[in-house]
Image 1 (tube, rainbow, N blue to C red):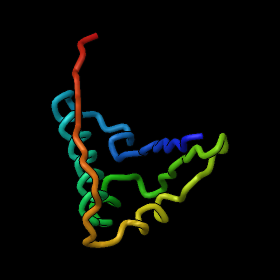
Image 2 (cartoon, rainbow, N blue to C red):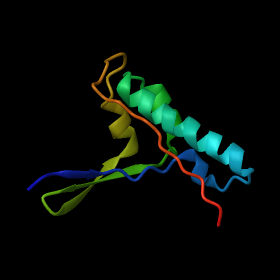
Image 3 (cartoon, helix red, strand yellow):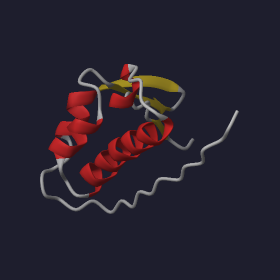
Image 4 (cartoon, helix red, strand yellow):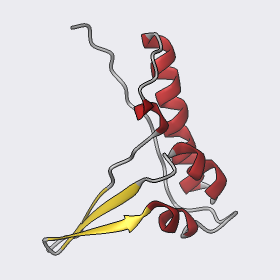
Length: 96
């Protein structure tokens, strides 16, 4: 059975900020880029800045849900190590 990793990111933008739509998108994109760059370039400080201080990750492995402490996840990123990761943000704004 394939292992699946589901990451529930509790990013800073979930803190209930009241911003206009453009500013919200910029803020969300900024946090996502911190995550992408932090994990790709071995920058735990940038990665830490993308998340809420108490975030948790949930991993589904062999039909079992496991929880990983956020700080433990960040500490696994080796400072300065280049990881073979490519990240890109795809966004679409819809009017409702």
